[in-house]
Length: 423
Image (tube, rainbow, N blue to C red; front, side, top):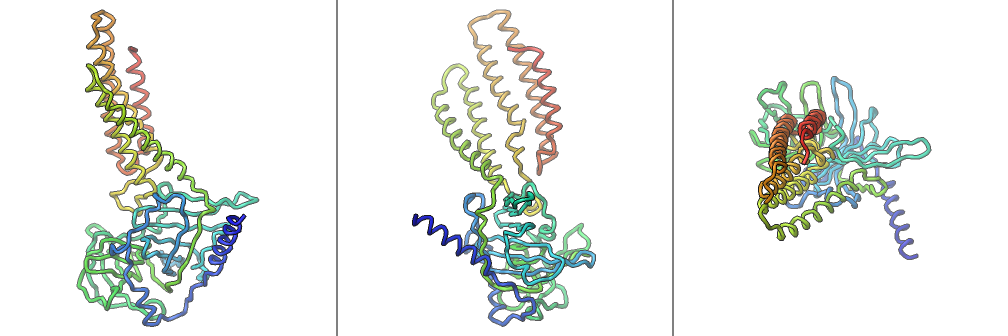
């Protein structure tokens, strides 16, 4: 009984906190103290705090922010508005919008709206999308990982590992309360070059150039970790695409996503258990491998262990998206865990064991000779199919599901070839 009362009181407190989120002031000019608070370097990108790992906390969707920004984005002169929420300690940002009319309430999280949608992007490379879907009589609350959903607006600018060179002039932001100094990102082959309007976290921005290392933000706006400190990016321009901060504050905002159904969590949790138990079994089996074909048995055991290790790495990358992680982070889908190439390698290992047993059989019969010949052909066919599938993976390094149809043709061909003899 007391537990139910506690949960009820906690729910009331959380709902009250959500409802009590104040709208952002769009016309306020920041005081010196407020400006310094907003310029304070996030501890998550300076190394003082560890960025949150959402994939290791699948059952904890209570998320907090301590910075709010209203961003105006223009593409070919048409303005839209977003709210960016930032956790400077947890190392993640969220955005709400777009809205086509500027309103102070844009900075308020309201997960009960039928069209609610909030996207979270973390320094760990995770992308989470909380969204409501109307089913007619009720609203279904769902959580997706960004590996299967493209969010192009968030990938508008990524200054990672790029040289920023100081340009002439300056611009005022947030009702003339903070200055942004222009730095051009001169990238070979890119035209026009993107420009960031930034202010250093401590003092004026006087550096002639700096090397950008990571961005805690979206659309070119947010905190840039550089080789000489941290900068707050207030504006971004690249051709007809423009973004600028028009309001900001350090209001604390809470979001409880417990009501949202995580459609990927069951798969991730089940995969973790299978990897752990599979590894334990392989280690136990390895200790008991003996006999004439022990080497082939050990190779099969090692292959299975490598498959589990690959799956573990895929699980770490699951939830990442190419759009946010750069070209070094490919999109990982459930199909990666079912790559037919893995099955072929396991079939090859079993065929080698069968060949070893046949070659070491005490019965030197015509039937046994035919069996050795058949298995040898199957091994050659399987090796050729493996090479063909590896070539497909090399052609699609960032999304292996692109080659599924081609792999299906190879699997069908191999089945026909290996079916010509059967032992």
